[in-house]
Amino acid sequence: AYKQDETIVMLKNAQSETAVTINTDVTIDFAGFTYDGALVLNKTLNVVRKDETKAGTATSIVLNDGAQINHSYALATTIVRNVEGTESGWGTLSAPTKEGNVAFNYVCDHDQDCKHRHDFYQYVESEDLEWKYIGGDVSNDTYTFEMEVGRGYLYANAADVTMNFAGTLNMENVNFTLSYTDKDLPGFNMIGNPYTHNISLAHLSGSIANAFYSVATNGAWLANADASENIAPLQAVLVQTDAEGTLTINKTATRERGVSEGRLKINVANKISLI
Image (cartoon, rainbow, N blue to C red):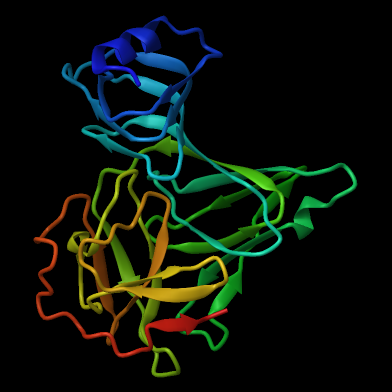
């Protein structure tokens, strides 16, 4: 683990092809600082810019599970997430950039067709079959897709994949239109964390239940009613409303954790299967 100053010096002196792994919480002043290698995060990176006239960039930042980035300005970079392939199980995804672009770079054997080793869905509350397959544009072993910022997505990957989100890290509050249809499992909407740091129910403003639902690897959705439970960067969850409206995902918490503000009570089973 590097101390703050040691990390900064090492990054400034590193060769462009060098990847630096940060295993401890650290703050870096990016004013006038450009790093061409990969920053691999296992903890929290706090990015500041003490001289606002100097931008500072990082070519790519690998965001491993449990890592997050807090930034005080619109940092331009590529967020990278590596996911091992599996023949079973599901994951969720959300775009952390203003642009919402994602590229899935798959590692496939030459005799395998990556097209059949990739599932990518969005949840459409108003449809009878809510899970809508959206795939993506295909070029060789790469899929590209423009994600809606604030919307959550479901994916499965049989082959190892590197996900690249190139653009400017989102710093603005995000408004998401909530849908409500009178049907089985009404009012469920799949939202995604649009930031590179953890958020919670305290960051969500709108008429939703006082819980969210996260996916298990077997496809079941589990209720998280603990107000202190985090929604991690790149993670998507299900929330429930009882009417059409707007949900605001705030970059900073707008209320104390644990305060319900009269939110809807959960009225579905603690464990539901939607796929």
